[in-house]
Image (tube, rainbow, N blue to C red; front, side):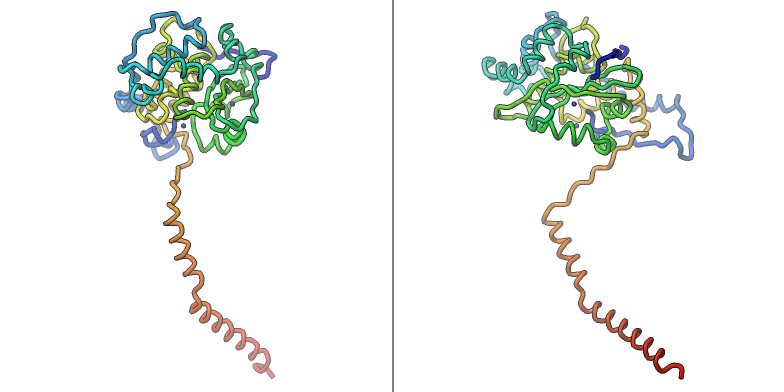
Length: 343
């Protein structure tokens, strides 16, 4: 799938790099990187992580032209099935009265977004960008990030935020944050010419397990805008889907916090149709991208103990007295020699 170009229009935990267990290898160290041998080793290493489709019923209907409500009902029905690998985490939530859960989620999706999806224009960057939205919103939201490369290729990234303003302006728009949080999304953003954020949904009502609600909302929006790897889209919506804008989303949002699922999703990039995605895959595998190490903060009790010990060491009156006496003697000797040393 080639990136879609954009003419006169101007268009906001990703896989955590710590989940990748391959040791970094620098190309400029004492030995050259043997491409043929390394690919064989990496293939063997990834053998247990090859993507597999979870036990879900096949798609019975044509979801390529489905309405937002039909796609939502599809998601809820799949995660509430006991055979689903998501049942343990989401089954109870999704199995609630459909008359309660479905209206809640439908009410989060902006009407303009629903209308655009129903018109089947999600691949039109101009129309998607025109959706806009309040980027100053300091609440929970699902957003779409349109990223445009200098050659005109466009990419979609869909994410969630507990504070939309903070997520966009203090994280996505902060090059230091992107540098320290390596991901395919940030990898492409750093190579882009321009970008634009669009608000897709907001969660304004107080709800139980709002983290699960946001994961379901984000998954739903990813399916509506086809912003997931092809294999994942076919797993949830069936085959024969119309190709859309290339996706910067790798893992299914429902799998947030699932280490093995994230590793499996990362392996999908190895065979991606997008050259930039494959470049990112091999840069990660070969250790060319090294995120800032995460340092766990010390517990407050330990910090207080350290401060007390340091304070005691700092106020050492005995050392201060000895040091002061030596300084006084040296100064006195200096002035005595100046005064009486030479006559």
